[in-house]
Structure formats: structure tokens, C-alpha cells
Image (cartoon, rainbow, N blue to C red):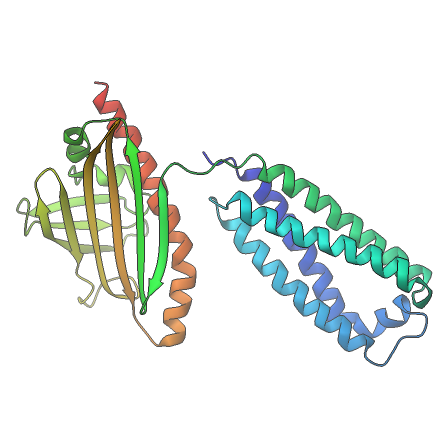
Length: 296
């Protein structure tokens, strides 16, 4: 458990509040200018609209962070810092430019700053509860290819870890993105299996790496017409090695998306966090099973 629920809740509320403020500035900049400034300058409506666009971008960032179950304490505190800077800027504007503002303008800036201060405080408290996940996961893009890795230490002998990792039908019990795995033919190198997804989709994989007790890999048949995902090349590699207190297993997934530069960029943007979440959940679920079986 990462205990990020509180931080993500207030990130989400902050996102919604920022989006509402941004939309209000875009839609009513002309009406808000005389409400805020005693003598509105000509640039005031444009300036308010620019601020509105900035708030919408900020809201989108907060939304993405709130969706990330494994959001880091550092990322949340970076948002807290931005909120604090907003509050400081509001105080400076009122203190040094008060005569240029109407009473309603000062009240509006104060109310918004108070709301932002509340979100900053709540997010900071939520960030303090976040616990870094045990699995070490990383997702990066290189030359248009997405490379996702995760590794985790487990208190179990390598033999137990290997047995769990090579229990192919049991893979569906620990992988959130797979509902069923069927071994179609063979064992070890050249083995074929079919995996089924949560929406009824399925695909075939062939084992192209097999080192007994150490490593195995699969190449996914993305070239077939009915392959369900926008990926042109996809492969995975699973490894285990002994460490001082037990074993360490790792997974590496290499995916090359289909399409033009824009669609590949969008795929990478969306898939980056999904891959990381799936791998961390899988590593934790696998570790729990491995340790249970090691204890008998």
C-alpha cells in the first residue's frame, strides 16, 4: 500500500477548483476586469485569459497526478510549493498594488488564495502519508520504443520464485491486465501460450528465451490482424537471481507503438503510467504468493 489516497483526493479537488477558476477567467474576462481593477488597463482582459489558460494547464497536471496511484511524495510537494507561491503572490499583489484594486477585487483574490492555501495544507499532510512502493519500477522511452522494468526482492528461495514465475495459468491470478492464460503447446523454448484480456481480447505469445531456473522471455505476435493493441513490436523478459535474504526477480517489457509521431507520442504518454502501475501491482502480488509458498 502506498497510502496516497488522501493526497490524490485533494489533488483532484484542487484540479477541479483550478479548472473552474480557469474557465471563469476565459469566459468572463471582460466582465471581471472592472470588477477587479479600479481603472482596468487595456491588457487586463487578455491577461486574465492568459491566466485562465495557465490554470487549465495546471488543472490537467493535477488531474494526471491524482490518477496515479503511485504518485510520489516529491511530486505532491512540488504542487504544494506552486500553491504556496500563488498565496505569496496574492499577498504581494494586495500589499503593493492594493490601490489599483477594487474592494471586490481584493476580496476575490483573498478568497481564492485562502482556498489555495487550504489545498496546499491538505496536500502536504497527504504527502506525508505516502509510502514508496517496494518494487522498483521504471518506464522510459528510447528511440520511439517504450521500455518498462520492475524488480523486487522477496524472502523466498530462487526455486520457489522460479516455480511461481513459470506457473503460466497462475499468471492470470496476479496480473490485473490478464484474465486467463492457456498453454497451447510445448515447454521451455518455443512454448506457445494464449493470454486473454479483461475485455475479451486475446493474443498469442511464443517463448524465445529460456534458461532453466534463471530466465525466460516471450515474443508477442503483434503482426497478426486481430492483435488488439496499437503496438507493432512487443516482448517481455522475466529473470530471477539469488540475493542475501532470498531472491530478486525482475521483468522487462519492450513495446514499440504503431502509427505516426503524434500517435506514438500519445501512446507513450498514456501507457507510461499504466505500464508502471501494472508492473508494480504484479510484482507485489507475485511476491506475496512466493513468500506464502516458501513458508509452506
